[in-house]
Length: 262
Image 1 (cartoon, one colour):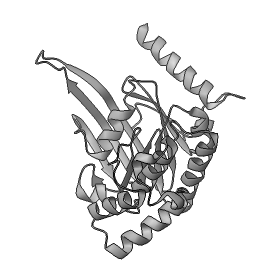
Image 2 (cartoon, helix red, strand yellow; image 1 turned 90 degrees about the vertical axis):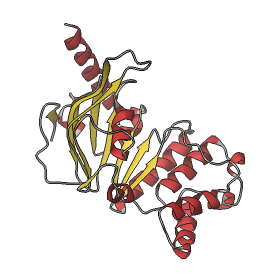
Image 3 (cartoon, one colour; image 1 turned 60 degrees about the vertical axis):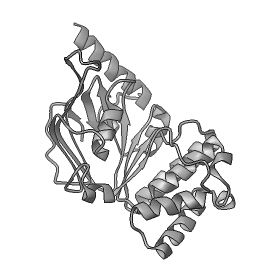
């Protein structure tokens, strides 16, 4: 069901609840003044769904993700992950995160990276070993498991990044541009993994500029523009006959910019 940006969420508490979220940054250099990054966003995401987060550069996607992760504090409003406040230990325990440009210690092997992240979550050695082996197999890196990350290709680093995001068996997985830099086969493998995560009962928030990828895997989309939420829901509810997600996205962004320029 589609809804406009000013509609407050009415669904029962789910995987993600964002209510009237505002984030404002102070201008650097002690000059005073502020810049609004998010302007009263409200949305809900039920469990076991895939949400595509869309928007042009500067729309607020990264700020929203960082707020969900607890890296940025809201200026106003609330954010809850499965009922726990964003940034709390309870919320972080149920999150997995792949940043757009994952940076890892290059001297670690793929297996050592997963073990390191498992330790951060307090997993027992036996559990760490079993999960690492399973995840390496799922992302197709078992043959390279004991190779140093310095020797990994761009695509391999993206795949080991996906594996580390899943080491704690999270309920909500946040993927920021997960297919960035991947060839067509690599993108296909990532789509397969995302679909498998949903089959396993996971909830996924998937930020991407690759609208064709979003259209193939997402149940819902949220379109941001200049810190505002323009649309949230199933895109088929507002697509015109024969209109692709990319065409819908361009139409919404152009309409928003024209309205604000008037």
